[in-house]
Length: 481
Image (cartoon, rainbow, N blue to C red; front, side):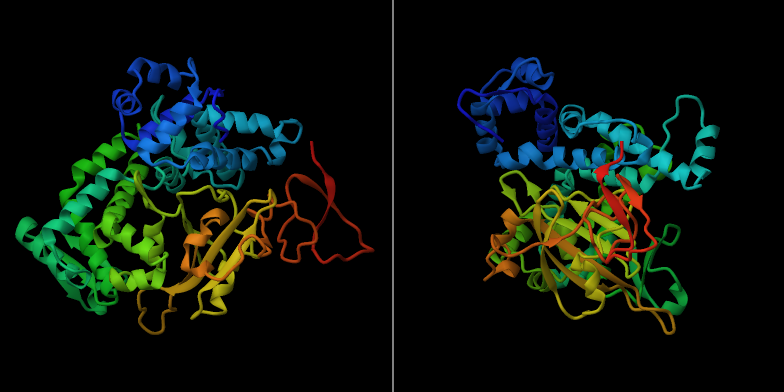
């Protein structure tokens, strides 16, 4: 972001989102910046500019990176709009990219609404008419949730995957327990028994069958399958503790999301309980300090906090506390068929919401090298570069002859942060050639890609029976209008 001395910027929606992410009222942030609440109100309504001096004061007071202020949310919103308006549905509309950027910056609420409307349209177009039938049965004026999973992902992204109320509650709990990581399971079991009359029992697989955790309300028993490993057992007890003790905090956070149908509301509550459980296992201050000291060595962090590789990677995407921020990571979890089952980002990586991932990203190669951690510099078509690591993980043990669940975890950040990672030691990040990837095939316009699964929807397919190219699809250089 430009910060020339006399420059004035009208960035009201962006400023408001920053204030809300910090959990501050207009009065509180006005006091911190030394200006009046009425001026803050005018700034947020784009009736007064934000000078470079105010932005610098904001960055200093709340430990914000001005580069993130300028691009973090807007890049994500722009990626969403660009994906939507690349659809052939809009082929006849010549919409300049700058207009999409303006819309992403000034009207993020409209961007979210368009994304949700397009998601519902996409499902209906693919023949998934159940949601439309449910909509027809609703009372007039009821809110339509096309995809509860995507809706909850939107809410997590809107909070930058950081919930200060839950972080504080988790740190308070760990202070009260006052036990090392290896003693957490026993301490949580004691707390559940003494404070909530809930007894924890590890049960044999032939009793639990396909269930890994079950809370028996009538008998006040928390049943944990013997198939879950040590870190998983501690996580499940922390989850149950969150359900028992953090209901008020969950409802406060859910209330900020506005009206929600029952399904996304329940899913959001479960997601928040999972977030709390991870924060209990890896308390913010201790975990952030260790991550910085260890240069984000995931395996050592897992050992220190008695956690799994995936648990640590997921936790690293949540380190967004003002004055104690970590590297803004993104995370992806895929199976060996390329299905995305988890994605989180505290940075600007443009995840696709309507397709898979690029096969040139080596996260998919981890299934061929299950015991190795792979690293890679990747580059998107717009020239943005990222550094990523990837490793295959196995879930809980499965009884014979059931297949062993396997997933690949990809963890990455913008190239400007990579020097802080132990995995980039010895690499010349400026000179390292990035592997060219796309968001997914339907949006990628790179030519001659041997891994292309479908042509880009923005270009005209060329069919020539006399020529066979490296790529299965040839297409014109001109965009379709």
